[in-house]
Image (cartoon, rainbow, N blue to C red; front, side, top):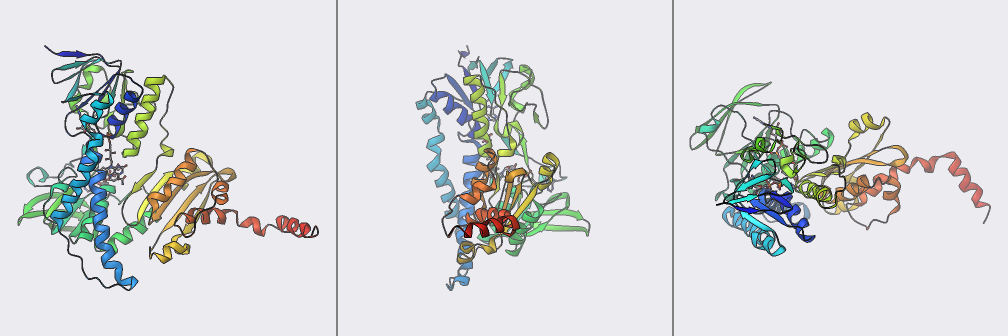
Length: 474
Ligand SMILES: Cc1cc2nc3c(=O)[nH]c(=O)nc-3n(C[C@H](O)[C@H](O)[C@H](O)COP(=O)(O)OP(=O)(O)OC[C@H]3O[C@@H](n4cnc5c(N)ncnc54)[C@H](O)[C@@H]3O)c2cc1C
Ligand SMILES: NC(=O)c1ccc[n+]([C@@H]2O[C@H](COP(=O)([O-])OP(=O)(O)OC[C@H]3O[C@@H](n4cnc5c(N)ncnc54)[C@H](O)[C@@H]3O)[C@@H](O)[C@H]2O)c1
């Protein structure tokens, strides 16, 4: 006989999105049930942000040893112990895991069920031997690595982000399908750790980014030895000599590529097949669940958030969605997703960070806009630290309003915070010009760009004559 539970909220999925909803609801003393079929913490903790950023951190150490020569320090080629490095990746995951664990959530007052959830009708979910009849449901089931329809792939061994961090040896030649954030972050990290790396993309690398800034990132990645084939179709894949062979085609003709290991980084597919959405009257198709800007599905009791919502796929988006859902569920206040305020960062070196509107989108929406640029080479901290190439571009609307910013360069992911705050709060370049930035920091780049926007004022004859007149007063 099934156990029937009647919480206010049933959350499906214990990743960043689901955990944020459950913790938020529990903090207000609202009864909440969380169903998670695999590992608490979801992708970000177990197979995404945390392991990838830990691996990137290790690869930066290796690169710093090589780059030490420039600073007058001779160190030689680093020796990488890949097994120890992966052990550290898992130790970092292990150190964060208690924060996301079932035990911690139970202690917060959340009922956690370790099973697969599926809808049985428009207001009931079944999970193991439980039936959950909640007033509201939140689908936070995340996404999985997309597997492209490449002939031969099903018979060829491949890695995804779910298996990459279990490798015990550094790939000799890692071939990566997809030059998005996952593909390029992992390409650069493995190259720096000593692997040969080739990346193939059917389109352009980091295609949603500003092309001028993307070029800065790609030049740096290529200069370190990663081979990148853009606009190249993979016609088939096969096992070959203990590794893989890819048959490719681009404008230069056909060629094949041999690698020791193949990594798929070709985008994400939302996880909603196991949910039996039809039973709950929730509209969906292969691309995902249909939702409005309020994150509600066609069944008004049910929200879809995080990667499962099918929009921008970041952990901070999962947390933002959780807040929007809770605002509606707990306080009955309207909430709308605003994608313009969401920062997007790719943690390559140099990093690529963007928020708000680029020039073309801003022109379409607001008519006349200005773009203010500032090069990293004009920043003292970039010079002292030998931080190479970088550029900031700020999209500016009427009266200096900051509509968006894009940065390629060291520390871009940290620097974009100030611009995310500016875009979300409709701040202007005057705010950036007016605050005092500590010297020498990379963040001064944003301030320097803002000052340059107002520089023509100094040449304005009217302003000059006012200054001249004021001289007469002593
Ligand atoms: C390699 C990689 C690196 C990344 N790096 C970053 C980064 O640096 N910064 C960033 O912001 N984002 C990053 N991301 C994206 C980020 O990981 C995701 O956007 C985020 O994890 C989404 O959280 P979520 O809660 O929506 O989904 P998930 O974390 O996928 O959680 C969904 C959970 O639902 C469970 N589930 C699914 N179906 C059911 C069911 N029927 N019943 C019960 N449980 C179910 C799953 O087991 C899973 O645990 C990265 C992604 C990858 C792949
Ligand atoms: N730093 C971060 O915050 C971070 C890091 C990693 C991932 N993520 C998130 O995870 C999501 C997934 O990232 P991703 O890089 O896997 O996906 P993506 O969709 O951004 O990029 C996938 C790339 O694969 C290419 N591709 C698809 N099919 C192909 C094929 N058959 N052959 C060759 N190329 C093919 C596409 O053209 C595209 O360039 C992103 O939306 C991103 O937001 C974020």
